[in-house]
Length: 197
Image (cartoon, rainbow, N blue to C red; front, side, top):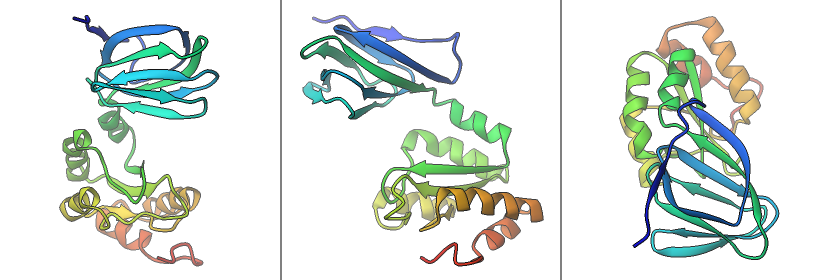
């Protein structure tokens, strides 16, 4: 039976970014989200009873508490690793009055963040959903996971706005008012064809 190591980095705080080169990493978990970007050699990832070959240039994402193991395929593998403590999400809300969340695809938020999202909205924070796929735009109502979030929290969306125009428009709207309903109204007002959806 394999042993399981719990890896923590308490001295680093909410976000961890580092390079690592290895031949093997025993079965372990993190209490963070972990994104691994393979850089030079293929990496064999064991996770959930399956093995996946990750090629250079590809990414793999692990949820908090998800056991995984790494093995080299050919030579030692170098990767860039980003670890994000789930507690970083509420911390961001304490530092700002507006938050833009870039999700995958058409939109959605992992369940682990919904309780914190609820707290931010109750505090009067402006939360806007964007997408990392600018050619598609965001539309939370397309898939069930996004529709649930949209119906429950009535989030603002960027639709087909670029991230740059979203940041600019949010700063402009928040400069005009501190009232959530007025910020929503201003953000949803088309200015110079910035929102065509």
